[in-house]
Length: 309
Image (cartoon, rainbow, N blue to C red):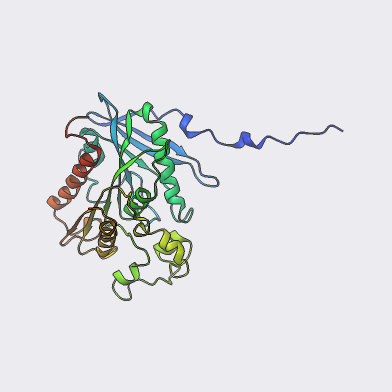
């Protein structure tokens, strides 16, 4: 009887995403090429994670990077969707950023139905590392990287900006923009109207993210709160929030601004009167202004002059 060697299980491992061919580019707008669905990560036991790359057709030097993190209550959402106020824009917000001389990266991350926190920030850290590894292929200057997220994506962008290491092999976060983001999960009980939020509810969006009711997962809730991680090395922040947000109270952005200020930073905070979540209630002019302020902040935090890709 012949002995049979065990099957080499390492052969089952997927290829390294850093070595895979990049997608064929589309041309969604003049001067813009879009590489949709590049694979950046294959978490064990989960679906492959993809990233969209909005890039200039031509650039004389590597360009700074804006990493956009989508919202959706950590439960749903599309990586390239900025919300209903922007879906009719032609050209779209990411194409406009490219025309201003940036690259834009829009990564997937595992949703709360797939894995609890901290899987989401682990995924964003992996996306930043992948961008840095592929920087030469893509014409990126990842030493100038701004994170930008809306709603749940703003929460994850802030967490990543505050906890991300600038060690060799990863991108350097030089700024962070949050739109109507939660920043202090334990503080939600005080910030939301009485009866509107129950920290003991295992079915809330926050509970689904944490893997249990926030009251029962107090340490996880604290660790998943950007305010917990503010320190002397925090990057500059731009915080935009509707003053009349009925889903994530504006007080949440104020809490992060106060924590940053107490640590010696000077965050930019703007509360927009009449603004609800997803910029509902704002005029088109105010929505345009939120976008313009975001682009201006990204320019300043990357040392990037307007119109000079």
